[in-house]
Image 1: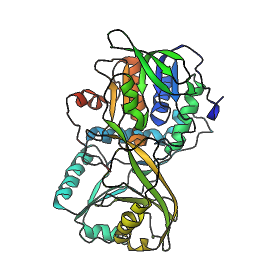
Image 2: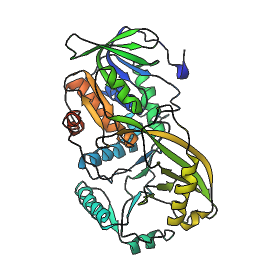
Image 3: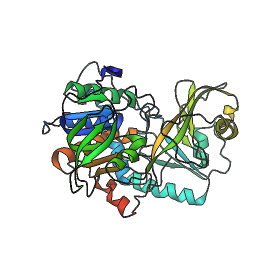
Length: 407
């Protein structure tokens, strides 16, 4: 047996659905399949590291927001908010399942140019039409509500404190995995190293494992996170998704703030939020922001000292005296085309489905994306949210799905 009790070799030679990657997207799809009364097939989830220690799921900041510029992204987050707040009931009312709530300290975007101010206003119109609680704030209004900010140069803010903030995505992931396993989904700790296709190349017929077995399949779901392009290449498919490194620091302040800090997106690109009663979490990236090896999790200590901390101290002067208590690097599965997801079937290899390229939005989008992928596998189309704008044809046609609210 392997980590978490996963076997290393599948028990069968053939499955209706093979999911490559067992982190949050793979687990969501597996759970929604087993929760669907119209599905009675077999599911195999293949995870290369069942500790999940280096997965994007394990290294996420676990936030949710509705402040997107694209209505579909807003609807996806709205579904997540309602789903997680009723999570125990989705798990059959199991008393062992904790109640999940969203810590609604919100997101606060700060604009320091007329151009970005107009983006926030345009985004607000889309968000208001979708029923979100987003509000635009003048600098005086920001100062009134959050007096600890230094607002030199800030022209406008945008905030929403309804279903926007932190949620316990790790617990949701863990229960998806447990529940789907108890319903018959098989998880193995192994790695897909190659794929077989039919003579015309229109279907994947099997996946080859590092341990030597070839497993026949009805459909394959690529849920392999930052390794998505590598998995797609085994099927002869080019996918513009690459690992990009993102850094996180948790710190305490000598003089804590008098109220919860919303996840504040500074014009510099640095973001910072409340993380506990007296601790805070900041995130950032290097500039330039190159693709990295999927095994590269080395911290850039100079980035903190030379850029992140000075930005924080300038925006919130009390953060001049702080102490880092934890830090880590993780990876975005970065969609180079438009930083939006790529999901659904390949237009030519019809039984190869994408679940990739979430560019930092993956955890908060996982319920809707898993549900949608399960619907495709069971019915051949969507029965709830129409997620077809995320399909691969936009990659082929170089037709970006623009999202202006990317962090």
